Length: 223
Image (cartoon, rainbow, N blue to C red; front, side, top):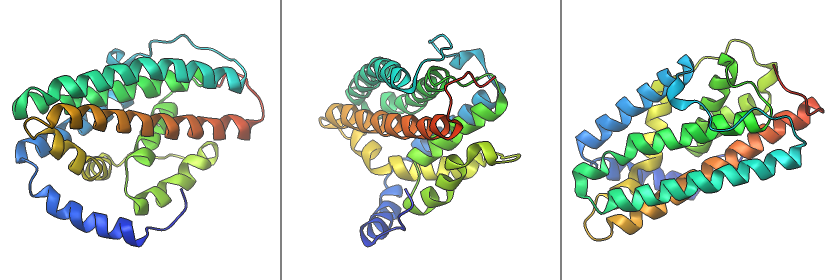
């Protein structure tokens, strides 16, 4: 997480800049609008993203088990959605962008509860958005965010820059989602892209919450 951007990352960013010109403007606008809506929805604690799990206070190993179990359901849904939208052509594919965001945020809310944190608190919802950024940002931005996530309980008055969040997320998605827009290969690309994206979020979220639980040294509910 703390490694500086390497040569490969620098080169891939240059390729990404060219790929951005191939993404339809409508798709880019949908990503921008979806990210803004997601941030507003998370910060408001909307019932639309209420976690499907009950609050628990298990040992860390039990939390890991429960999160993996929840992940399996979200993963299956995300992959099926990517394949389904990938078969539908460009216009249908665009609907995958906000739909996948909803799946990701519901999963993050479940993670928070399963690790014993009170997701009704605004600071916990902001923490989820930082996990999201940690998972889907460039190497350079990741090195800036990681210390904030690692030392979250020592932070004061942290806000969310949704414009930076959406730009990083859009850049992260570019190549995989461009392939999904293509005919014939779109279904395979869509399923594979959603598999990789939700898996990346799971690994990032689990380790982010593990750091907080282990730093606290106890497994009590954070009310």
